[in-house]
Amino acid sequence: MSVFSFDEQTGNVSLLEHPAVSGLASTATQLIELIGQSEYCECDIIASNIGKLFAQTNTEAAPSLVIAKAINAQLTINIDEKNMLVEASLVTAKGGKLLNMEQAIEVLTQAGVKKGISSHALEQLLAQQFEQPSGSLHTAEVAFGKTPKVGNDAKFVRLCCTAQDRILSPQAKGGGKVDMRNLGDIITVKPGNELMRRIPATLGVDGFTVFGDVLTANPGKEHKLQPFDGTKIAPDNSNLLIADCTGVPVALSRGMRVDDVLCFHNIDPSTGHVEFDGSIIVSGDIKDGMRVTATGDITVLGFVESAQLKSDSAITIGKGAIGRKREADDPFTCSIFAKRTIAIGYTQYCDIKTQQNLLIERQSLHCNLSAGNLIRVGKASDSKGKIIGGHILDAMRIETGELGAPAGTKTRVCIAQRWYELKQKQAQITDFEKVLISKSIELQQARERINKRVGCSEHQQFLNKIKINEEHLAKRSASISQQKQLIRKKMAQLLALSHLKVNELMHPGVELKIARESISFSRNYPAHLITHSEGKITQSF
Image (cartoon, rainbow, N blue to C red; front, side, top):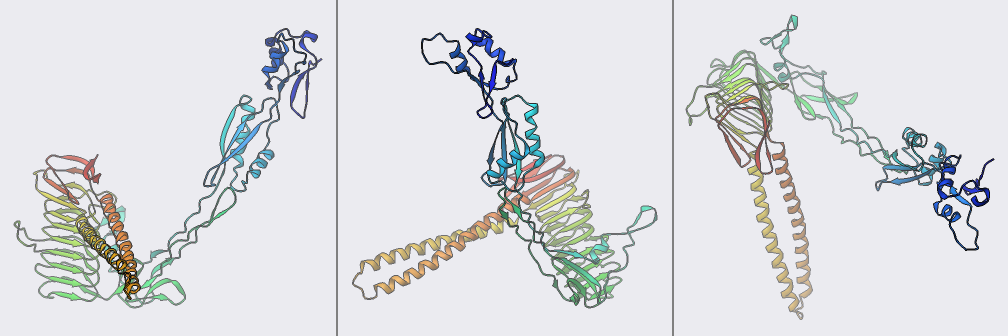
């Protein structure tokens, strides 16, 4: 027969009669042990009431026979300030009722949580009621908002090869070998050939908060397909660019053009200097002393020997470019300039400059090199070429296998020299700011003088003119401030992106300059990366 009674409504556990009457326990400790052996062992014991049962007191009030209380499992909800994450805290029951899934969902619903509830996470949290001690606290993330997914920008996919693609991809022979001499047929297109396809921007995917509020996604940036000379938009497909004439395709950022092509076996005194409004393809060599100028690509399958090449597009030289040996102040006999990428097998005693990337497949020996972005000597997958001697006038990134020579040949490398141009613009902006401040002071002084002449009939007219000038000055100041911030951002980005990467070995005799910081190296260094960090040049191995 039980000595305890349980109230379902209140959860109270009571003695049927006072211990002194029943004689089941003579001390508080014995009564607690008796509770621990009963079905109410997990209930929360009310120690103060038990103590009063055994206290020797003369008070007339009968002590309470409620000695324990059953406490149900409790779930509390905490939502982060962005309404994207819900953390639930579960206190397991003390002899009371367990919390089931339906009740947990109801608690979340009452807190306003409508979307992103993870049933799996919630089940794992509720399972702690069967595995962990009563009254223990457990927390888990049980609902998640969804961040909106930004749409993809419009993309442009080339559907044909260019002359530069062909020269950089020698034809495969049998047995997995590559024939470096066989560079395939000259790439030409005919009217109607597909050149480029535009993949439109996507709208993105909307997100939501745990309250069910929609977070609208930003769509991708839309760019139009741009037809250039010799191309047109397909009549039946606005996302397709096709050729409109026969010629050599040239890839541009958001479109293509088709150049007229002039083909030579060699360019030598028998052909004379060549200047052409279009692309030039030379299946052989360009000989000593010749000048070649083109508005389109210049593609040479053989050598360039002490010649001058200039292109408003890209230049590709399959084998190499060689000039005559020179003394320190002598001009180069071989010079190559392009506004777009220059790709060459190897270079020796050449002056080479491009506004984009300079890609040398094997070696650069005693050359002056300059690029707007990247100078890489070696293959893209593993730059193991060599830069020996000469002077790299400027680039943002330089990648090579070896830099310098074992004999300590001086090799000068300058990176991020555009920093000086940005610094000069910054100084000009600062000077102009001073002028604006001076003008502002003059207007303020003029306003004070006008205010002293109270009786002047033109008083208000002067004030209106001053106000107009002040508003104009404020707009100029805001514009200058934005320009100053932009210049500062560009300078920081330039230094952050600029680096020299040596994949194998750097020899002594290398002099390096990044922006205005300089350093000389007098010993060998293994593969490492050189960057500009916190105002100084740093090496990481």
